[in-house]
Structures are given as structure tokens and as C-alpha cells.
Amino acid sequence: MRSFHCIPFFVHVFVIVGILGLAHADEPASTRPNIVFIFSDDHAYQAMSCYGSKINKTPQLDRLAQQGMRFDRCLVTNSICGPSRATILTGKYSHLNGFKQNGDRFDGSQQTFAKLLQQDGYQTAIFGKWHLETDPTGFDKWMVLPGQGHYYNPQFLTPEGKKQIEGYVTDIITENALSWLKSERDSAEPFMVMIQNKAPHRPWEPSFDHINDFRTETFVEPQTLFDDYSNRADVLKENEMEIARNMRPQMDLRIWTPETAGNEFKNQFFNGLNPEQQKRFVEAYKSDNEAYLANPPTGKAQTKYFYQRYMQDYLRCIASVDDSVGEILDFLDESGLAENTIVVYSSDQGFYLGEHG
Image (cartoon, rainbow, N blue to C red):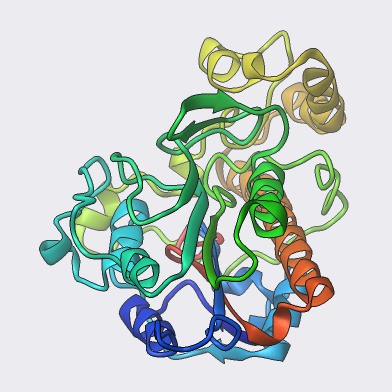
């Protein structure tokens, strides 16, 4: 397998050009490499064991790194969700592709690497987070989340309209991508598929497969967890990014009970679960929440507690992404496609895990 494992800080255009240089329409389909681009959202490099993580294990990402190339000296072109995606598709900086900030609308008429591959006879597909406001172009098959999308029972946009699928978003994205790879494409032609996960984006809602992971772990706090920004630019102090001040106990950390949950939490998350899912979520967090609400910590003790809760759910979401990577690699191995398939893993940008608060 020709595999490229990229940390979340990488030069997108160089990766894209490297791939396109391998594809030529006059080559037989059997020799033109297939391309699988797996993309996560806000995955910190320090939460991958192949980059030395001391807080979690990512065996499937490690497997990809061991079989291919790990990028260590890299940067992200624009470290915001939508603009990062637009730079990857176009190979252009944001001021040239027109998508400068979240909320802009991507001009789908411009050239993209997906369109170039289509012109060279590739079948193209995209599944998962899109976040570019307009419908995808350059893809023979697409099924994307509206906006940020939801972790549980998400809606998807398709050429035929919206459809809602019950289940966990990472699993659903993976299942639909694999279905296309296995039975919905022409096996005589090369393919490029983008598998774009919502995870581990805020609000870090884990799957039931991993909801009890890390429950007994105590994570080492970063040395700068209590950075007060006293010697930094005012703009940093104005950003809403601190664990102490900006973590939402219910929405981000699931510190709630059915009796104490506010309308925002109920309407944006809890009410969207089916009764069985609601029951399992209540049970998973019940003992921790009852202990917290009986004697809520304050000050630095609260920040320490919030950090531990944040890390648990963030890493649980990553565990599902790692599972997904394993399913895709297994399919490529079992189908005999691995030897002629380029696999790229990256995130749209990195993330903080308590550093500088």
C-alpha cells in the first residue's frame, strides 16, 4: 500500500500535487493508483501514538504510519475548518480560492483536484463533513453533512435531497464509503474517495462503543494549563478558547442529569437521540455527574476537573476514527486493492489539549 500519514499541520498543495503526478489517462486503469483521503476534524498530532502520544493509543493510524510515510515538518494552509478544506480541494490559498472564513460559500465552478482526476478517468466520491455551504462538485457520488452536522442520528445532504440515518456519525460515514467502494463503483476504473469525519470536533460526543474508555484514567496536565495570558497580545485574551472560562458544562462536558439539563442541551443534543440512546447516555455519565453536582469544585479545582472530562470524550471520539481507519485498511487488504492504493490521513487542523489553558 502506498500510504501517506500526515499530521494535522501539513502543506496541502504539496500532497495533492504529489498524488496528481501519478495519474495519467493514457495509463491502464490497473496501473493508475487509487486514492483514499481520510480526513478528520481538529485531531491534534499529540493524540496519535505514532507521534509519541502519552495519553492514548491509535493502533490503526500507527499501522498506516508504519506502512507508509509520516510527515513531521509540515503546516496547515489555513487552520479553520472550511478554509482548510477549500485549500485542499483547489491547491490555492484562501484569497485565491475565495473561501476565507467559515460561513463563506465555496465557488464550485473553479478547478479542483477531484475534477482533474475525473478528467483522467477516475471515479470520485466524498462522504462526511463538507462545511463549504454549496453542493460538492467534481464528485460522482456525494453524501455530506449539512454544516457541522450531528454526532448521533445525523442528516446528510445528497443529490436527491436530505436523508437522516440512525446511528453514530463516524460509523455511518465509514459504512457508506465502504459500500461505495465494494459495490457502487466500476471496479475496472481507478477511484478517489474522500472520507471526511466530523470527529473529534467539539462537542466531542462519543460512540457507545467507546463511551466508557478512559473512565479510570487521570491525564497529566500540561505545564501551561493555567497560563493567564498576561504577557500575550490582547487578541488572545479575547478568544473564547479556554477550559476555565469557555467550556460549557452541559454541551461540552455532559455534566447534567435529566432533571438539571437546560433547553439548549435538550434541544441541540438529547432530544435528537432515540429512547434507547438517551437511556445509555444517562447511564454512562450518571455516577460521575451525580458526584460532581453533589459537590461542584471551584477555581483551579474546577479547571482541573473540566480538563479531565474534556480529554475523556475527545479521545473517545478519536478512538472511533481510529476504528474507521482500520476498517478501511482491512477492506483494501482483503480486496487486493492495497498494493495500488495511496492512503492519506490528515486533519483540517490541529488542536489544543489543555496547553495554554
